[in-house]
Each structure stands twice: as C-alpha cells, then as structure tokens.
Amino acid sequence: MFDSLSTGFQAAFKSIRGKGKLTEANMRESLQTVEQALLEADVSYSVVQSFMEHVTEQALGRRVLLSLRPDQELIRIVHEELVKLLGPVDNSLHLKKDGCTVLMLCGLQGSGKTTTCGKLAQLLMEQKVRPMLVAADLQRPAAIEQLKVIGKTLGVDVYADLENKDPVAVCQAGVKQAQASGAQVVILDTAGRLAIDETLMGELKRIDRKMSPDQVYLVVDGMTGQDAVNSAGAFNEALELNGVIMTKLDGDARGGALLSVKQITGVPIKFIGTGEKFDALEVFRPEGMASRILQMGDIVQAAREAHRIVDERDREEMERKMASGEMTLDDFKNMLEKVAKPGLMGKMMSLLPGMGQMKELLDSDEATGGIRQTIGAINSMTAQERRNPKIIDAQRRARIAKGAGVQSPVITQLVKQFEMMKPLMQGMAGGGTAERAKMLQQLQSGNLMNDLSMRGMKSKKTTGKRLSNDERLKLRKRREKELRQAKRKGR
Image (cartoon, rainbow, N blue to C red; front, top):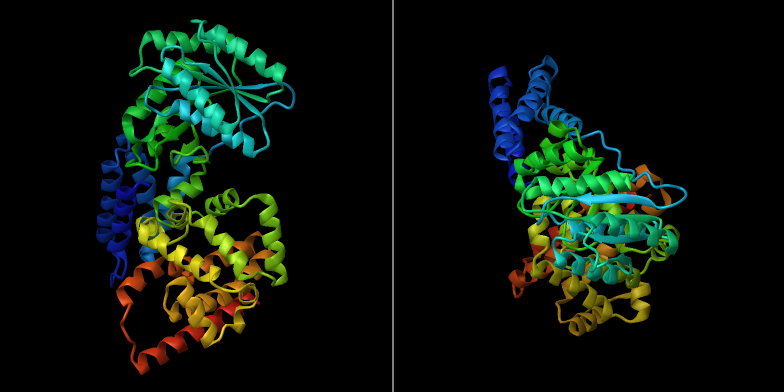
C-alpha cells in the first residue's frame, strides 16, 4: 500500500540520519524529498503546499535542529500532520434503534460499488446487524445479477425487480420489504456511469430526494488519483455526501486521492477496501493510515485482523489456556493453520512495525511452505509429545523428523520457539490493553512468525551444510540467551 510514497518518506528520514551536524540547509534538503514524494504520489498541489508549510515550520525549529535524533523528530512531525490531513473521521453508521437505516451507495462504473455493497453487508453482519441489499442499478443488468450472487454468497436478502424501470420505485419497494422482513439496514446499490453526466446526477438526486437516506456514501477507485477527488467534489455538490469509501488500496495506488479528498472536498474517508474478499473492508483510522504510510505499522488493525480469523469461542478458549499455561503444540498448530491462509500472513506482517518490507516475501509459496512444514512436524508427534514437548529426546526427535520429512534441527528449533513463546502469550492473556500491545511488539521483535515462515526457504539453502563446532556452540549460546530473555519478559 503506497509503496512509492513510503519509499520517498523513508529516503527523506534517512538523509538526515547520522549526520555529524544538522543544519537548516540539510533539513530543507530532506523536506524537499518529502515534498517530491507527495507530488509524485499525485497529491493535490494545494494540499502539498499547505502540508509542507506546517511541516517546515516545525522541522526548522530549534527543538528539531538541536535534537539528538532529528530523524525521529521529523517522523513525529510528519506523522502528526498526516493525521491532521486525513482526519478527524466519524466512522459510525448512525444506525437507528428502531426501524430501518437506509444507506445509499453511489459511484462511477468500475469503482467497485456493487462489491462494496457486499463488503458493507459483511461488516454489518459481524456487528450482529441484519442488512438487506437493493438492486437499484437498472442501467446495467449485470449489476443486478452480481448483487444477487453476492447476497447468496453472504446469506443476505437481495431485493430486485427486473420489470420495473424506475429506480425510485425499486428503492421504495425494497425498503418496504426490508421493514416487513425485520432487516435493520437497507443498502441501495444505485446506478453508475463511465463519467459524470446530467442523466446520472438527475437519477441520483431523485433517489436522494424521495428516499431521504440516512447516510450517502461515494465509492471511489483509489487508483485513479486526482480523478477520484474531482468526482468526489461533483457528487458531493449534488448529494451532500456523508463519507467516501475508497477501494482498491491493495493495488498500485499512489496515495494522491487518499491524501487529497478530505482537504479538497471536506468529505471524510469512512472505509477503505484492501482486497477482493468481502471481509477486506476496514474502518478508516487516520492514525493507523499515517503509521502505515510511514512504515510504522498499525497494531490496532493487526489486532482487529487477528479477531477476524479466530471466532469468539475459540478466542476465549485460547485466552483461558494461555493464562493458565495450558497451551500445547496442538493449540499452536491451530493458530498457525488460521494464519497460513493465502495472503493473510503478508497482510498481518505489513501491519506490524518494521515488517512492511517482508510482505511480498511472506506471501510467497516458499514462506507459506515453511509454516506448512511446521504444521507437518507437529502432526508427526504423538499426543503426549504435543502436550509436553520437553519429553522429546534425540530418539523421538529423529522419529518426528523422519515422519515430517525434515531434518532433526528443525524439530529442535520448533520446540525452542514454542517454549520461548509460551511465557509471552501467558503474559498477553493475563494483561490489559497496554500489556497486550507490549507483548505483541515483543513477539514481533523476536521474529517468531518470521522464523517459522522463513524456515522453508532456509532449509533449501542449508540442506547438507554442516556447521563447525564453534559455530554450533555460538548458535546454542545465542538461542539459550534469547530463551532466558523471553522468559524474563514474560514474568
């Protein structure tokens, strides 16, 4: 996400890192790199000017120039200004306590509007809210069929009337049916065009006037740059938008639309689409997005993703086991199987500080092969060995390795990693929010998941390579030291 923009920012921070003496001249040079990165990302020129004025005013202050870590001070300033640029945002859907809440989605063809209707329905169902979809895009018959398929996939009711050619009548009938069926939210999928024209705007105005939707959201393609900002302005003049849903941010999006739309139109971004699946719709958080752009990670979103892949019952049972110290290799295997889904590990790692650059590597077949190798090794153990891996001696280790098709050192490393992880997980289960965040960072800094995923790649390169006695001794001492440190942190 926004790789080129992130690379430009990192180049600016790197240019002042380690300088013997920081002056106003070399600070201005770094700020020019920041400005260039924003312009290349297709951020509106007026937005860049305003942003750089605020950053420059603070960066050239005495506090930064005399700081022992001026690069960190500059990162802090840029992060704060990015948050101001993107926010504040009210993410609430303002659902009614009684009756149906009507949400109207609009946008140009190709922006992902119909798919976003499904994503929004999925998000509502996760919040125990029952939605209904209404197919009001009568200009494109394929859109009606697409919405029906989405509804069937998600288990959501869809109202469609192929005979009626009046979108207002279809919306009215859809809302009436939703009220009769007990649906709490109605999502109207309205018509789109390849470009903004009077016919499109006239139809949307009629729906808006007759239906009086509670919220009107514009769906825009984040890869279209300033075109997305221009269309947001035009739609907002006609409909008074409540928010923007920006899609396709998992693709080659430069970031110009994301950083410009709020400042230019005054319309906040409320949700972002980060993938093709229906669960790939995130509540937009300016703080988290600013951190991702600056490659600082987003621990809050990482926790939310973790909650998505583990259901509430499993999560409660896992926390109980971690808190009591009962966690076994079976539990560890179940956790790995959930994380090993295609693309999921790369996404999770991209949300952790300092791990964004590992995304492509962790999404590779070799990386997921490393996790599958770990799961295979655990499957080769007896039930007793999975409950108490400390009993695994040299003979057992050789048997497990043979059954899993790996070398014995892989089993040794797996057991050590598990024993290292247990006290950290126990502390995470027993602590509050701050303690959990701290433990997450400790797990990440220990590169546990990275070690597991990289094992498949390392095994190919190191097969047949023998370590010298000195190398083995150094390796054993380093691992024992890491284990002691992890245990102390877990107390």
